[in-house]
Image 1 (cartoon, protein in one colour):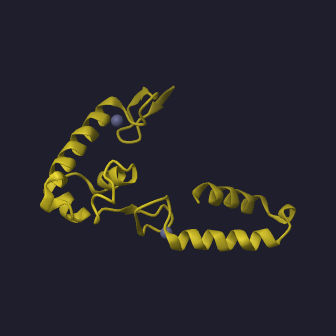
Image 2 (cartoon, rainbow, N blue to C red; image 1 turned 90 degrees about the horizontal axis):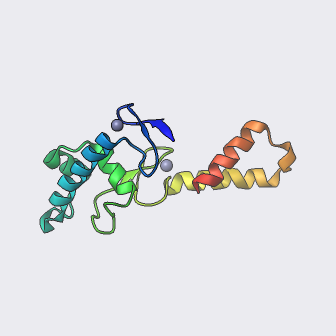
Length: 133
Ligand SMILES: [Zn+2]
Ligand SMILES: [Zn+2]
């Protein structure tokens, strides 16, 4: 399947990777830089801001590594990525506890109504919410 790279917009064959080979290469180099820095025992508790400053790797990329579990929060306690809904720092799942609760409350309310009375828009939200939890 041919697709545009989400980083640089180049067209590439999308099979095993989600970004093009040249971005992939840059990403691997960034990962090695970050991992090399964090592997040092005294850097294990570095914050995102400190890692960005020391390695020059962009914050977004760094959070992406954490999200992909390539940098595991259990190993590096001060690293986190962002809730897809509100942007709060989280260490597991796709959304934070508050947003999860908000969606669950919304679902409960819906469950009390007849499902057939849901507007199409609500149904879309409902399905999106179920996928996120
Ligand atoms: Zn690319
Ligand atoms: Zn949130």
